[in-house]
Structures are given as structure tokens and as C-alpha cells.
Length: 159
Image (tube, rainbow, N blue to C red):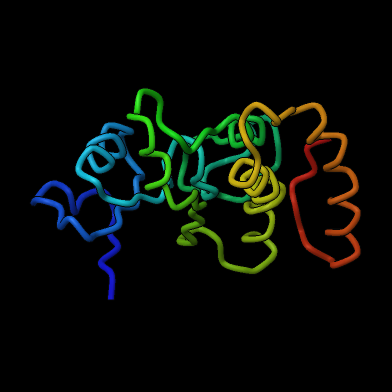
């Protein structure tokens, strides 16, 4: 068994075998990596899909917990913190989105909040930063949205 916990677990002293889920300040990622711990990057700045995708005063959006996380901000996320020592990136297990559902009372709303941001995060997690291109992603996204339409998935149309 492996202990996995949100970054608060570091406040009381982090077990050397624990995996930390980084959701607050990126300093926790650096501290855990310097300690030799593995991490999963889940920062609220780029991966909290319970935040609005657009300004709710200007666009119809389901009620959200607050905050604003548009598609382009998800796409520019780099799960490798700046300034880490060579080799420490191997301790980063990946990235994870959070979609807390206290305000989302049905599947349609959950899907709307997840898509297409989930597609952007998948590309972030699987693509080297130097190969990412937002304009290219957006042109390919049209094909993915057609697939979501076929599957009857509810999503926020970014076009």
C-alpha cells in the first residue's frame, strides 16, 4: 500500500514513501521533489474543473464553486515545475483534474464542466511542451467535439 494525500500531508512531515497530490502553492511540489517524493500535479490554478469556463455574467454556465478556468489556461499548464533539479521530473507521476460536484446535480452539468477541458488536459499530460500548439489543438478539437456529439456528451462549445 502507498499513502497518497493532498499537499496538506507535508505540513506534518511527509513520509519518504508517500505520494503527494499538489493542489495549492507550487512550492509544495518543489519541496516534495527535493525530499525525493513522487507527486501528482493537480493545481487549482489549472486543473479544477469545478471553476467556470467563461465569465458567468457573459455566458450561460452551470453554477460553479467560483474561480475562472478557461480552456486556454488548461492548455498552457505545464505539470513540471520550473527550477527543479535534473532528473526530478521522473518523480512526477502525471496530472489530474478535479471536478468537485457540490453544485453539479446531474450528469449533463458534470459533462459540461469537464469537456472540452478534459481533452486539453489529456494533451498537456501526454505531449512534450515544445510540441504543444494551441491553434493546432483548437483545429483538432472540432473533430473531437463531433465525436462528443455522436456520443451525446454535453460540453461547452468554445467556438
